[in-house]
Image: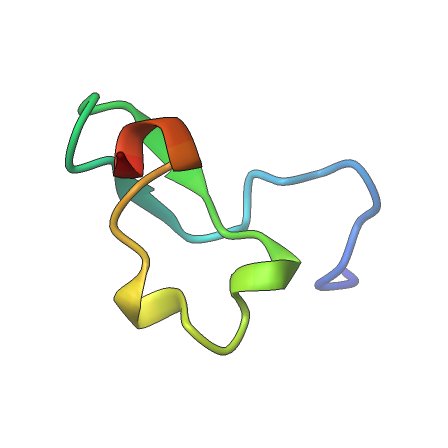
Length: 46
């Protein structure tokens, strides 16, 4: 089984947003800073 199925995001790590308490998934743009990500969006960050 391939690790990278296009469209299948169930294997991606998740975190809970510090503001809205909703789960959000890993994104490619956060690849190098994933440990520092605390918010699901800019709106929640502000």
